[in-house]
Amino acid sequence: MRDHRKLRAFELGDELALRVYETTAKFPKSEQFGLVSQLRRAAVSIPSNIVEGCARRTETEMIRFLDIAYGSTREVEYQLSLAQRLGFLSSDDATIVIDCAAETGRVLYGLIRSLTQTRTN
Image 1 (cartoon, helix red, strand yellow):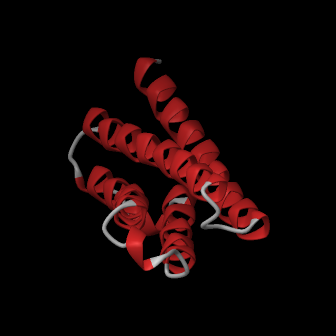
Image 2: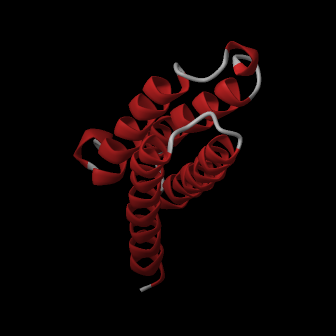
């Protein structure tokens, strides 16, 4: 078992989830069961899948959960972009949260690539 708290990807994913919750609290009430719910679910999925992957016995399983977390990160990026274009997010708020999502994605991708290369060598 690995300690997820030692991974930068987990720290960033956790920070992203918090930012998404704070940001979506400002969305229109009409989006509570739409984009707000979807964004929050995808954002929480990122650190949750990192935690679950770290709890798995094999590296192959861990990589699979990291892949899911990476996919959720990209999903959050798109949904934030959509929210901005719909006028639910100011440009400043969108930039901060989208940048956080992009950094989370970069770190996750690097971790996945590193683990995949280590496994094949």
